[in-house]
Amino acid sequence: MCFNYANEVFVVEQNCVYQDIDGKDEKALHLIGTYKNEIVAYVRIFKPGDYFDEASIGRVVVKQIYRDRKWGYDLMQEAISATKSELNETNITISAQLYLQKFYEKLGFVKTSEVYLEDDIEHIQMKRK
View 1 (cartoon, one colour):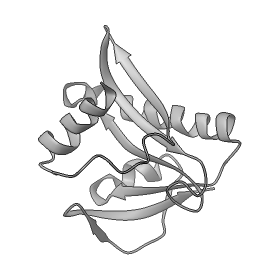
View 2 (cartoon, one colour):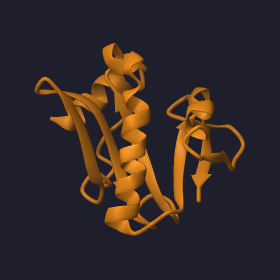
View 3 (spheres, one colour):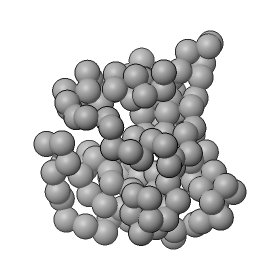
View 4 (spheres, one colour):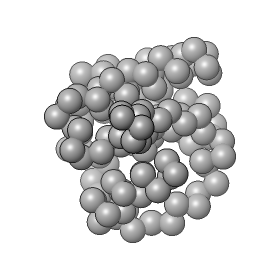
């Protein structure tokens, strides 16, 4: 169910067709945000080595109609906290869509790569210590 929700944002909204069978969902810690019994936010967290050398956070999604509520920031704060409490990790790497660079900088992430394409969308790697 949460995977279909991620597809709603990445595949439908962003017109980014990809195969979701990357084998990583089974390794991830999944955080799901609900509002009035509806999934409205989702993120997955990985221990070091499962995605990047460091712990990582990815597939950060908030349903479009709720983005004005700043739940993306809350979701990321929870993901950062879960990375610390569940994985005992503070070094976190993300692959961020370029247009969200300032959003992630507000959460303590810094740009560590040049722009690259992932699924035809501009991304940068960012890290938080």
